[in-house]
Amino acid sequence: MPSVVKLLEQRELGARRRVDELREEADRVQAELAVAEREWKEWVIARSRVGEVLGPVDETADHARTEPARPAQGQVEEASSASTAAKPKAQVPVWREGLDVSALSADYQRILQALTDRHRLHQGPLTCQEMAVLFGLDAVPAKVEALRSKAKRLVARGWLAERQPGRFTLARNVSGQGGGS
Image (cartoon, rainbow, N blue to C red):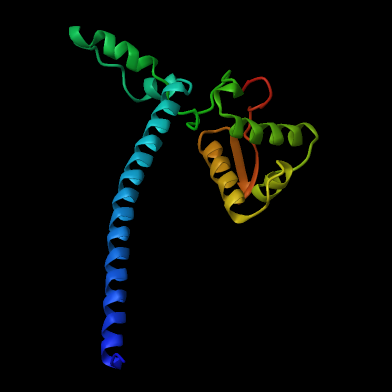
C-alpha cells in the first residue's frame, strides 16, 4: 500500500503538469489575441480612411482657412487627387445664404427637418429628449447626448438657435427644407 505522502506527491506533480500545460495554452492564446487585435485595428483604420475618401467634399472650410499653396512640378498629380479627396460628412459647414441642407449628413438633415416641421406648424423649440422620441430612439442618456452633440454643432455653425438652454429651434433665416435661403 502506497504511503499518503507518496499519493500527495503524485497528485501535486499531476496538478503542476496541468498548470504548466494551461500556462502554455494561455501564452499561445495571448499571442494569437495580440495578432488578431493588431489585425482588427488595421481594419478599423482602413474603414475610417475609406469613409474619408468616399464622403463629400467640404470646400468652404478649406477656402476659409487659407488660400491653397501651389504644388511643385512633381506634386501636381498628387495635389489634384488630394483636393478631390472627400472629407467625412460628419463635418457641418457654417450656414450661409443659399447653402442647401443636402450639404449636411442624414442625421443633421433629420434634426433640421424636425425643427422645420415644428416651425411650419408654429410650435415651439424642441429638446433633445423630444427629438429622440420623435426619431423613434430610446430616450436613454447615450442617445439623447448624441443628439445634443449634433444639435450643439448645428448651433455653433449657425443652422440652429438655442435661445433657452437645451431647447433648439431653427436659426433666423434658415428654412431647412430645400435650402438655407
